[in-house]
Length: 112
Length: 110
Image (cartoon, rainbow over all chains, first blue to last red; front, side):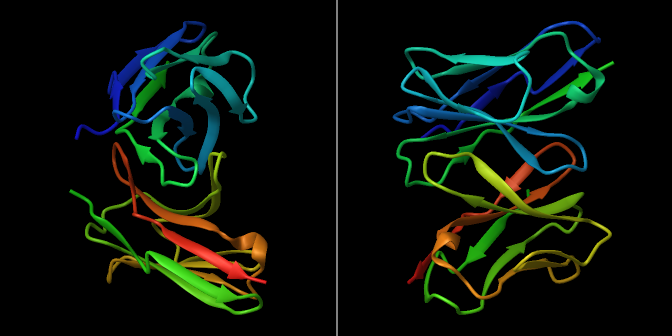
């Protein structure tokens, strides 16, 4: 069974640009979570999608947005990039709320 | 490749007990180690982060230790409460990735 996949693995942008990160969950998983891990900081919850709907979001500005497609894959969009947006962005999927989340390898975003 | 193991997989304790969760890892070349709790329907919540140069961190009733030489970390929870019931995960940050353990499901019985 394939795990959670994310693309791209690395992304370099400049301030003010937009970044789009993609996540494909494990087959059969309908929930997708997005997290930000800035260097030296703890993992922070960004967004939760379930069955195509945004269910919850963390304490991030509106320029962080996303969506979930009918096949349950998901995109995270970050507009008007700032230097502090440089981080590892992780996606996780799960089938049932009681189960452990399975994490993808992450996308490392660097904003110059 | 980093391998992270958590023991036990599940744990039930009566309210008020002190408990220890264990995390072991194979590669000591890490930037930091984190402990998280996972609640159904919510994202992971970071509990404690220990930098590679540190040996322990404390927050309230929680204390986490890190021993890179032995490849182990422990999360100590004092005076457990029913609200502590959750799945606890440890994760190690390497150069380009975050490696998660398999988690310990804790149930605190009132």
